[in-house]
Length: 223
Image 1 (spheres, rainbow, N blue to C red):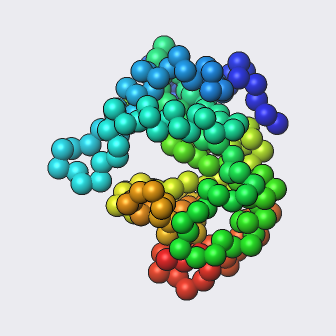
Image 2 (image 1 turned 180 degrees about the vertical axis):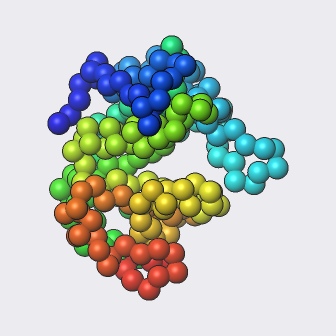
């Protein structure tokens, strides 16, 4: 069931322990509501991606993030879920994959038939990014935001792209159940990505069994 943009859900800290801060409230936003949060979201991006200067796997700069967000916001049915207390604590945003399958352009192997069918039926939703402000009470917040964003669109399959150089991000996503469907490189850019998918529900997981492989595997969609 799609949740309206003004409906909220309160979350208590995991384990039921009392919190020194108020529980985060989640709220769905459409592109028009996001417009007024650009600066706050850029700050959130900078804090969530803070790394040591020597880290070679840093993401795009704070200055580049608003441009990427603006591009995603122009896509049909763009949506964002935020978590907030007295300030913005996190967000997840994305958009459905168009039925023509153009989002998969640049994949190094034929798209598995099961994923192609889900794409044509409108069941694939791209998780463009999850941003979480570092906070001791926010363990598990990323997963809750992801779940609300994807289930709100009744998606059967989540999809995302991660640069191959971002090794920690790839390892984290795979540990959370994301599956590797191959290497992807856009014709307009030099970055090589891994295309990851997340089956939502037992039925979708069964459809993908044997078709989605980890890097180095020999099955369809492997690197």
